[in-house]
Length: 239
Image (cartoon, rainbow, N blue to C red; front, side):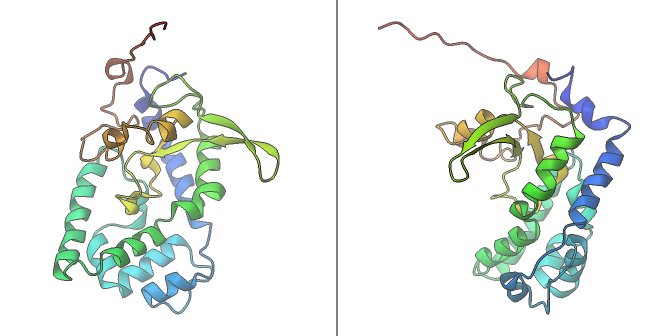
């Protein structure tokens, strides 16, 4: 069940403690020996570096990285409030465009690879991000529809066992905005239908880019679930 407004849960007195705990957990999980990452950034080693340490090194050594994120600490990016994210996207995308224009677009794939490598959701997903949301919030139902549970029970054919999954959606697609791949307020607890099934059907173009559509995230203080979200029931005609 979703209370009067979802956003109220994200402005509670304890939210600052939860934010700091999330950031600390990310930093506690070091980067492993990553040959491709070392080569892309010309690093001597990435062994046992925390995300914050790696970010600081890249700000110093990589001119593109330094230009894109000048003025922003890693913590600011990870814990940026939902109300501030749209203007942040505008600024970062403008800086990325400057780099691509100056280099005649030749560095596009390489640049996005760098961003995805640092803000790597896959690296942190199972060990840090999913358990953190599951253990620190009492969300039971989807933030989008408030109809279906955020947990999903599936049968793992490979290991022949039943597992319980917890669904998190990137409100701003990590494929389009890789630098928001592990940002706290870009994660929306949701059901498997809203997270995957709907996105993979004909309405994909509607939900694919919440930024260009100027959508408001459910954890945004300006989002009013009970005023904005409506459902329609369709009855199929009998043949």
